[in-house]
Length: 321
Length: 250
Image (cartoon, rainbow over all chains, first blue to last red; front, top):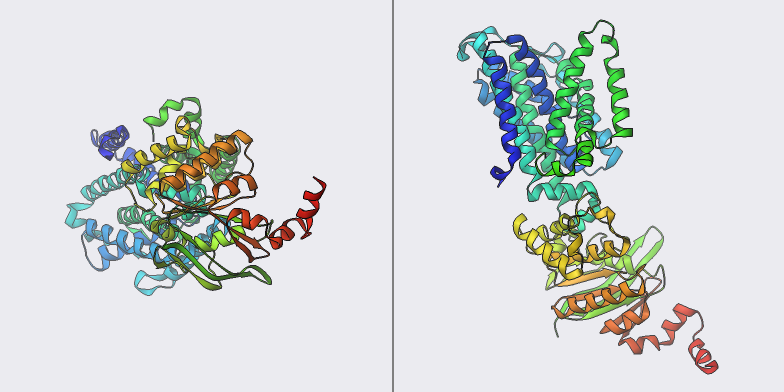
């Protein structure tokens, strides 16, 4: 059924572009730019499942990415597992954690839920900072030998890049599949009016816990890959609160609830951020500008770029999801 | 006649307020039971207890042979007991069709999307919203939203439908079409429990009427029995002999 959605082909085309662009002339600096964009798209797309689809604002979404990175790096370095398996296991473990967190905090609604997600982020960060096997606050380093099974560092970085692009494509396909499913319809009903949804037969408690857990999976896999690529992890970079907030800015900018909106917002925001961070004048102001941008979007275009497009070209709804 | 819904000795307190106290009644298959009473009598609270939004402090509720006293609302729907809300709760940003599809998807038959969409468009035709299927729900008029409530509940393919003041706020023409709709629903084999303030409507539709006052059951019986019951008249109008007085001046 999802195969009939024209949008699926757009996603695959985007992914192909991401692979072809740096590969055809072995452009490593372009690859590094694109990897950041891909991570932004992964985070924003999966955050969209919570905020855009279900109507629950998660301020601590980055916790999944960081935990995934930790589990992944632990498995590859300490246990010597292979990368793909480690990343998948990281995804599963973090999803299970997410399910348990979700059952605990999803009884809360609105602002109270949002506060609890910050609490979870802080609690996990505090735990990891004191957890011996994961190197406490100094974190973990990847030994250079870990790149050997993938054919040396140079090849390993390319392989990691392809895997991250695959995760990016999967994130968008997952969003698309959920959007067109019965499960997704249940989530939309919860977003619009949770009490009404329950009375119509949606098991809201279970649905929320499932989507919270699903939204943890691919960011955790991406975290495992990304920190493998970076070769090191510590609590402050793994659980960077700012990145969690910026994920929300990306989503609002692009258009919450829309698959391409999340991706577009992730891309544009990441571009803007790298421009601001490298510009000598503005580098200290990038969060000020992000905050201002969020304010503008919320006030003047609550539907984000895609919401704006839908309003002016209603027909675009059919193709652009 | 076997009872489809059996409510026995149900009570509910909110802090010091006894909202519903020791209420019992039953509904037979194919019956329309009217539930009336002054404002604050506990009618909507009773609905909320029956469909599981509130848990009863005492008493039990049996539906189609199953004890549903502790069931959550979503499980109650799967058994075939659907309801509408007095204060309409449309899923605003979804289309009318999607709203009803939710009802069909998660209702008694737990349909998949394609089948649910089909049922939804049939039900929309039935309630007269067929031409508005593609609009977002927030753009409907109040009468449209009331119909949407009914359509969503019907799409769940219930055995029993709880209607909470579906006629309130409608103009006379809309009332007439809604009454016709309720009658058709009953004729299609669905039992109905309805709260209504509009006396002519409830008198003409109901097979039996239950009257609540201050959380207690005041009377139960055929429509004309109930309106001549002096307790009922007193609860509504204050003076037990007002009917006689009024008829004398006529």
